[in-house]
Amino acid sequence: MRKIHDISILIAEDESELLEYAVEYLQLFFETVYQASDGKTALQIYQKRKPDIIITDINMPQLDGLSLIEGIRKHDTKTKIIVLSAHSDQEKLLRAMKLQLVEYMIKPLQSDKLKAMLFKLVDEIHHLDHLTRLDEGYIFDTLNRSLTQQNKSISLTPREIKLLELLCEHANHSVSNEEIFHTLYEDQPDKAFSPNAITSLIKRIRTKLPKNAISNHYGLGYVIHTQR
Image (cartoon, rainbow, N blue to C red; front, side):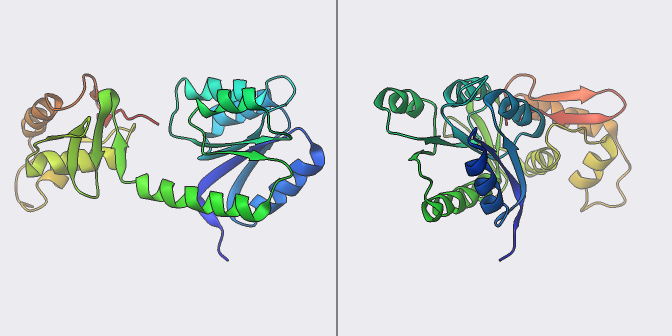
């Protein structure tokens, strides 16, 4: 079986034997597996590496699992999170359910159940890859080439669609004026480069997006700012 290369996972567990077993098991399926034996280290890894999936124990030193998740959820609702607990604790379960968890699993860990859950999450993540989320509930769907806000469709011209596709492909990174122009007018290879044409299009598309969704990096080009 080929390992999954495009999705990373973090396991946070303070029981050393269980952590070692879990890491070895996860490495059977994932190329990139991070590990932490306490909540503080787990948070530092999350902030630096931004894993796609997190599996965390509830009771850990320095920072417990639920506090770890609460910190993450203040800024990130996308990362998939699975909570582990040594026993069924009703109070903690109710607290955990408010944190948009994928699953609340009771130890001892059942590898088959965990595997099924992880592959379900992988499918979900791959399916959502074509959705680019902006502020204020705006979503650009690169698969269907459509822009919506709170499920309300926003009309786009063919060139506006091309522009959003290009910017979203390089989300949160600058795209040069030259690359934008050649992408927009690829059907007109002899057309002379015109910065004004790009400026005009950017001005129009900004009226259909949340404020400050697209910024101009002087000398570098334009960048679209997306949510995690």
